[in-house]
Length: 65
Image 1 (tube, helix red, strand yellow):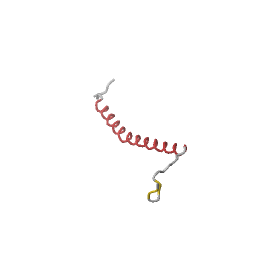
Image 2 (image 1 turned 90 degrees about the vertical axis):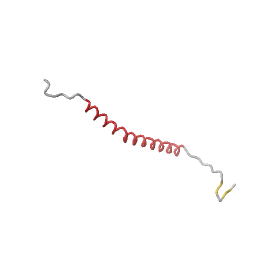
Image 3 (image 1 turned 60 degrees about the horizontal axis):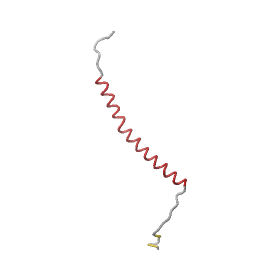
Image 4 (image 1 turned 180 degrees about the vertical axis):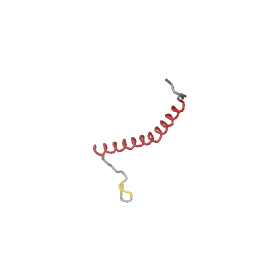
């Protein structure tokens, strides 16, 4: 059956090269999103923890020999 000049049923074939390219592109997008979230969240948290460790470290007064 035809509706407005286009068939209602369309068949498509994705070869192995196109399929692998699509899977690779999808994995690259997912890895990029993961890296962005990791960068935006982990490094500020790491810096905050590092500052907290320095401030909670015991302070030595005077010269220890």
